[in-house]
Every structure is written in C-alpha cells, then in structure tokens.
Image 1 (cartoon, rainbow, N blue to C red):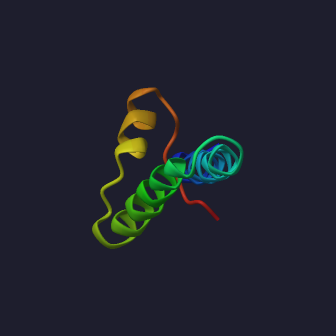
Image 2: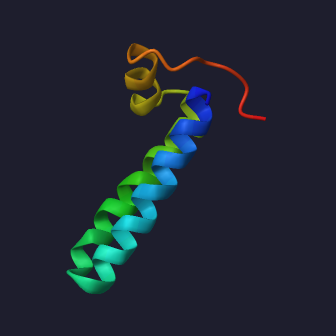
Length: 66
C-alpha cells in the first residue's frame, strides 16, 4: 500500500470509530471527528500531512493513490 492509501484508510477508520464512540459513549468524541476532517481539509490545500510524515519514516512507500 502507498502512503496515500494508508492515510485514507486510517482517517476513515478514525472517523468511523469516533462516530461509534460518540453514539455509545459520549458526544464529545465528535470533536475528534472534526479534528480528523479539518486535518484532511488543510492537507488538501497545503500538502502538509503529519500522518504521511510518520508513515514515510516507518518505511511505507510513497506513490500515486490511484
């Protein structure tokens, strides 16, 4: 898998997990959902993604997502 696909998978998983936690535990988990969404939005405009930096250091190969 490429860095871009892993970022998409992790972000999607975080959003789904936080929505489940908000439904079953506390609505405050929606702040985490908002944080992930805001990070995805800013990375689309700036190209800066902390998760991509971490994955690159872990040795995940870069490449085209599609």
